[in-house]
Image (cartoon, rainbow, N blue to C red; front, top):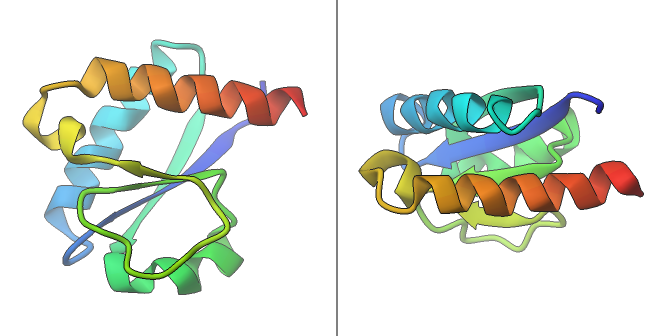
Length: 100
């Protein structure tokens, strides 16, 4: 399976997105995925899409602009409640992309 790129955003692009990205990498690795992540502020998402070309976006805050990439709510990665379910949803979505 090819390496997947996931853009992780939060309000400031520093701590929360980094924590969420680390947890997401671990969860997806246990599901057989190799993932590269990049972190940014939610306000930077639209600009990062053209350079990072993510397969998915995980954000712990609302992404205020319409983007051509599937966006997942990343709060479960921070709270821990529902993190496994979110990882399953993202893994299922990434499988559909790799099958295309």
